[in-house]
Image (cartoon, rainbow, N blue to C red; front, top):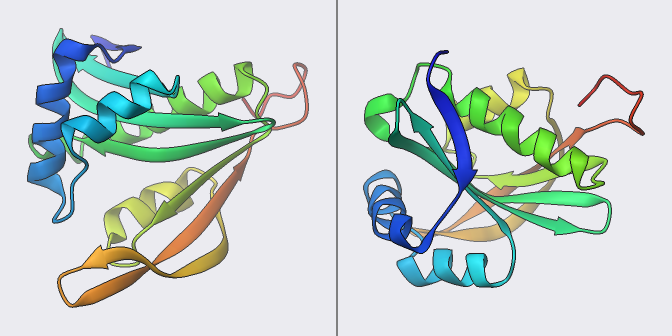
Length: 157
């Protein structure tokens, strides 16, 4: 895919990112949530295609684990492999930072994301009851993990 680049999220990106989150999710992150993640030193990434923002992600490192807190592709850009590219980028960033596994939570109702994660090698390792707010109360989270390998000679990363 020509013209795809990843760069650290900047304060001037927050309005676009939070706006996309509002378009994509019934319970979106606020501009403040993204700003707090940047201030906390989390890996906040913007994906651009030919200079235009098309996706974003937030990655939290904890010792030898990385946790994807948010990963999204603009609705108009979905279905073109950009989510997989963003996910692969996060896995590489995490591995280079010393993580040996990548974790995330996903709503059971988000079937497109579940399919992407399964195709990318993630395995289901658990469920968090009532984790997400939902229009009719709460929705569980499916917890998934991707092994990133054990060292620099391991080709998993």
